[in-house]
Image (cartoon, rainbow, N blue to C red; front, side, top):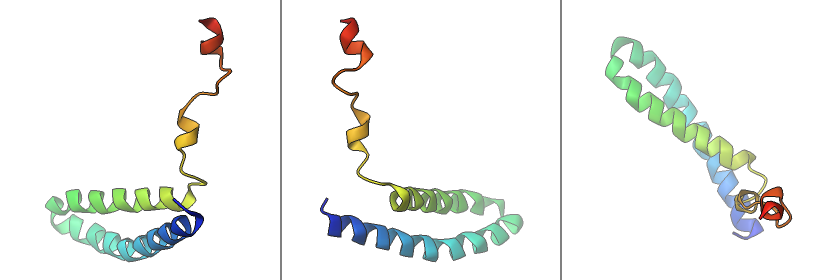
Length: 77
């Protein structure tokens, strides 16, 4: 993803968090009267958490998944 694409995605994620936060608050109130709403509220909460992760992520993160070339596991072989 280019820098502009990443910045745009973060901006969209921030907007999503703003929109969904008000829905989550409303769902919390409704959940007390109707426990069946809890699954929907949980799904909205998880979506907010994913968006927050995207906003705070410093990069793609995929580079961090691979161990360094000179790690101990390779030396042990």
